[in-house]
Length: 184
Image (tube, rainbow, N blue to C red):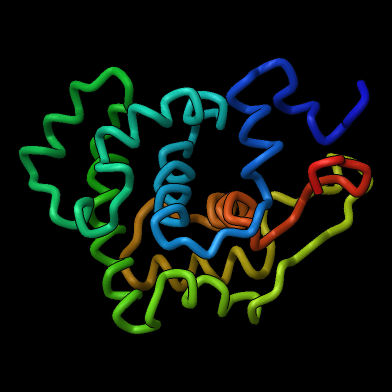
């Protein structure tokens, strides 16, 4: 295999696109960051492949992850999503999108943006492990544990330290592409 960094997804067009153009790429966009937080939360207990293949259904169901629109979703609207086969039909996960959006709005009011809040955990710098082998890549870190603890304290759901570590990768705060990966 030419690129060991691609081993976890090679041959899956959706995951190839994600790895090559989104994963570990820095984003300062609050909407995108919120989308990735929600998708990572939906992945609890499931494979990332499952979530990525449902991503478009999630975007449709959750107003393209517009934070204000998600924060304003009604109980009836959320209950209706429990019948949508395009989503993971877990009530707690579905309702957590609204709750997390409401908390993100409070964070935005406090910090000026969700982005400013997130990047304070790394003092504005990207954490780059310069890994040589996939086996070296951790599943959590001191930063993901601190972020998880703070998010949970604020009332967010589905933000354990493993999920927050994956989230850090998804928005480029952590670069875990292997040193030899062409997509670093």
